Length: 281
Ligand SMILES: [Zn+2]
Image 1: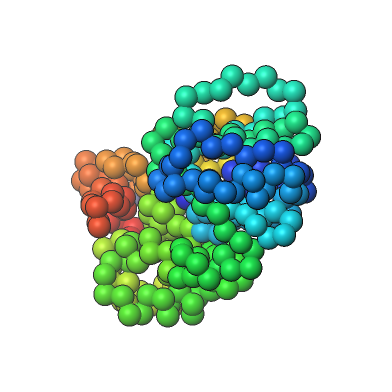
Image 2: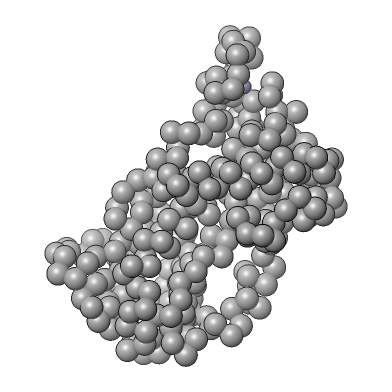
């Protein structure tokens, strides 16, 4: 599932195609994805200029002049394709949403598994509505620092791994970047969140910011479905320390795999966690 770096990469790819441009039409090729598609939205957006595009957590928000807009989530397999004016395009199976711009450009939302969604929202109150009303700070923003994370973890008795996946603690993290940030900060995913010290929170905040920034720089991570708006893969998966590397040596370890078994995979809250029991305590 796309996490912050992948969603950020997609949003940046949409900007040249959509931002400050006028919507000619918005077409839904089916009534619903994960949720019903907003039937009234095409009429509301037609002829309107897109004033802003932003990412919050794993969501993309798009607002037109007048404030009407939509929230987009890529789900598991959602891909946004950007087509320039005059570019030939043959419609594909699972092209569910098509946004045509007056300059001839097009944006196509393709989602084979339909876990993605598009719902309407408004600039005036989007932040007061779910899921944004309970969302924690943006990890790359100035509102995310050591004491904020420490406070967020202090009352949680469950594992640190699970706490970091909770979007109310910090927004945008998923399985990959939580595993990688814990690895970089030397903290075991099994530790109780409330037992992580302020000093360790300091390391963790830095690791989260670093791993996300590096992943954005690399265009995200492509494991199965993720592609950017040009259909290209991200390449941060080549830099994973532990994620999806069970049984292999982690980059910073001099331990013999025969002795330690290498990177361990365990299951926490139904999701795989990967870690090095030697470097993460
Ligand atoms: Zn190791």
